[in-house]
Length: 103
Length: 313
Image 1 (cartoon, rainbow over the protein chains, first blue to last red):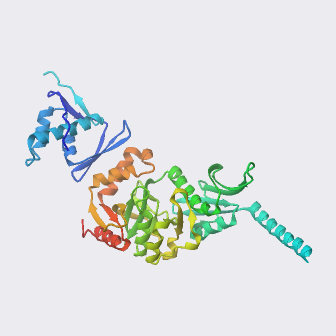
Image 2 (image 1 turned 90 degrees about the vertical axis):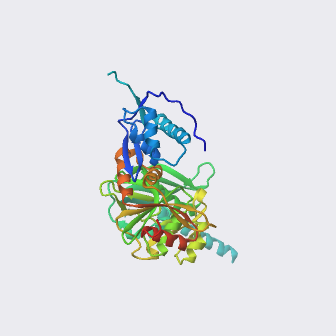
Image 3 (image 1 turned 45 degrees about the vertical axis):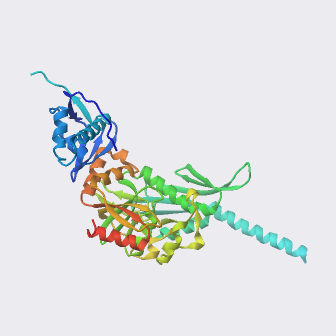
């Protein structure tokens, strides 16, 4: 299935929402979001993205870091799918946008 | 002659009515503790009290628990139609009104389950059948109609021990499965395959359970006197899908996915929330997780046993 195209601000700094509780299980994860009393399942790829949402890494760098784990997949397609996955994390309230701090 | 015999028959009939009326006035209350579930059943229908007692006699206690679920069965005539209806009430509140006495026992069971789901606070509850083999607990979780009870009965016939056909009760501190050994509710579609396995289904007492249609209750203790398991750790989670004509198959799924599915199948996750998720994660961490396409019960049982031993996944 073709991943939908998502536009991100290249300077945006995705950051895991601090209140969300994460349990790792064999390279995947289940998250509990107390704000919405919701449980989410992250497959291995989504969990990799989630782990890299540290509030210091801009979106392009984050996607490249994650893409490096999938050497045998065509880059453009992969990036589009990773963008879609990141977008879902954001839309489900699991990832926020951090602020760039002045030096 | 005729004039003499008619009053005699009427007299007998009156006498019988009188006896029934006295029995109805009395009613019967008996108390039980089925696993962790305290139940008091008051029935003005002696047949219902008798049938319930037939299944749960080993769990009878002689004093009610303070937190006992009180279920009352009372026949009443409608003042409008004068038809007799049977009312099932719990702690004074009406749960359902039935026309046929054949429907009462399955709905008493249903009421008991509804009370467990609402008012048994100490356990994380999953909608699942639970069985054990050699002390290893197995949760068979899934939506209604996926053949949980039939598969549980099939495993029972293969020598497995029984915990429940409706609830996985997980103690949040010990993460052990607690038995709630109610009778298994078997739908008519499963009668033939289970009879083929030699299970003692009583087809003379087929009852009607609303949209489920005809059902029969299977007493696990009638299968084997030691058929009920004690508490045990969870070693496998099975998500069965009943496909009658397909070849049975087992496929591994990830533990994280299994946790997510268990949350969806939980009756009271919203009560436990974050700590409840932690309980499920730690429970699943030590368990194999599989989807099972179940068909032929013996073959499906073999595959589940192989998976439990780690031979296939």
